Length: 240
Image 1 (spheres, rainbow, N blue to C red):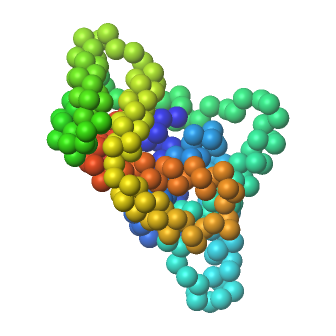
Image 2: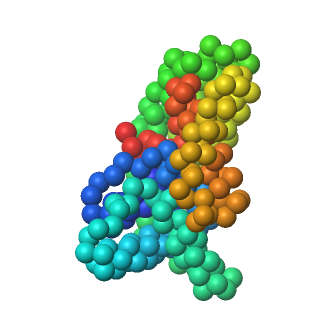
């Protein structure tokens, strides 16, 4: 399952159960990334969201609607982790059945992917990261590589999309590391304080390793936004 399917199905289920559209926050997206990187099956995440809302709906019925509206995905994190643990126990070492999404084609045509990479190359050239001593060389290298991959896609000599996405993820990690190294101490402190502030209401529902990973993901996303770095993964092409 690619990024777009995993993220979009979680977002859709959360909003469906919430009963109204809510744009997910940076914290919410970081949380979804930690679930995916931890290998938590989509079915377990959706089951956890449903359980959390089932409890919420029952409580709201008893309180006759006088309950606070759910305003973040992190609210359901404990239920998701419980569902994930149950999925592991139920699997007993057997591979999970492939979902209908995994059997479907990605639909990412080479020309469309090539255009996406070239737009990202142009965005990198225009980013604030170019102005930072210590990160401009990494940015320039990434620009050249993105354009080279785009050319390969158009010549049908490119690697499979899953392999390409891993390459793009590594490139993004190198860019973030370079920007983090070159960023001012004040900017980094501000990012950490913002992450801690937004996580505060959910600390009691998350384990320490999960909190640490979410903070790291949150800081990465905000750092990229601050220096106008484009997201390189093919998942983000699905949001265009």
